[in-house]
Image 1 (cartoon, rainbow, N blue to C red):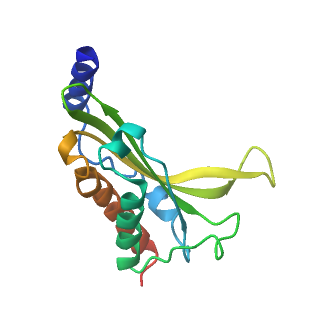
Image 2: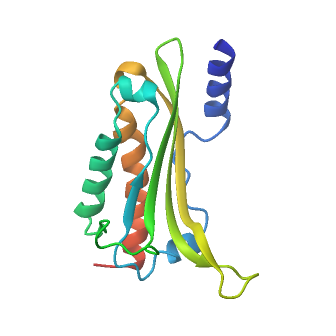
Length: 165
């Protein structure tokens, strides 16, 4: 366990523990013309769930952030099978010392065409951002305010830059 914790610390120090922004202007441009999007929140690990981080709390924070910026969320009833959706994933690793290492990824998934095969479409990630970090067990819900909300803010800024309200 100590080796894993040391490895996580090295990755945090060596890597960028800040937000990794979408890499190019094409990512932002891929959001143009969207009238709304679905939302998929991955389930959290059983450890994180038992320590207080819930899928419902994550969903609530993301929905509130998107709606507060005027971004329309599609429901199962209003979303077609090919509508884009925002995918939020929180992965955690609990350590013996009462710490959690985490990674949060926010991806926008869209139905995209393949250049190599005419008329063939598949799901692809057209916008993505992520962050890694560590938090004490008793502060596990800080992942929402310290990691998820800033990533969603980055998404809303890019979305609104190409889809002004």
